[in-house]
Picture 1 (cartoon, helix red, strand yellow):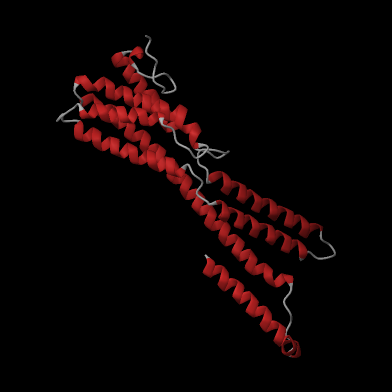
Picture 2: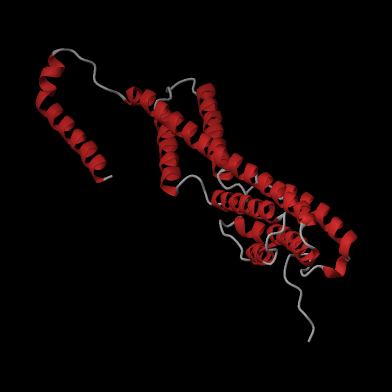
Length: 267
């Protein structure tokens, strides 16, 4: 970083000093001096390049988050079904943990992800799930459930990782500064006469570029803002497995409430 700044500053200083000593010769050759318009093209190119790069990065992060949510929902659904092959002593506990895990993700972790955080509520049920697996010994379904739990954990970690902004604040502010400088430069080059149409075009361009900036800021935060990923996949699986659990064991056998919090046991 220091080297980059040093080289850029050195190049600027050398160029300005060289121009100071050679400007007489340059004027003698009749070379046209630079104007503000000469800086517009490279500035436009830089701004568009940075906007495109950041937009692609933000969109990729959003897509990865959505894919992780769907993958996690599918894996957890498979875990519930695979638990049917577990021994009776662990079957109900495993399936109850799956239901409560989904409830905790939906009600506790999803709001936390809007702020780029996670929740310990789902971890409590996934930990209990693994504790139940330890009591299965050499049951035929053990390997399948262990593998599914590993896939669930990986999908959850991906989902949580994508909850943080994909674009660092310095990059976003650099892009915002480039956009502001471009707009100011274009405004300085407006003609003195008949400026209504051109000024209107500049206003439209400013609005479009601002819209792109707002979209980038929103998309890079997959679980907050206007364009946010909803827990629809998680909710759908939760609804299905809850119905199956209640049909098999009854509603009162679940160890958690509707929000995935452990039920208090009356003394």
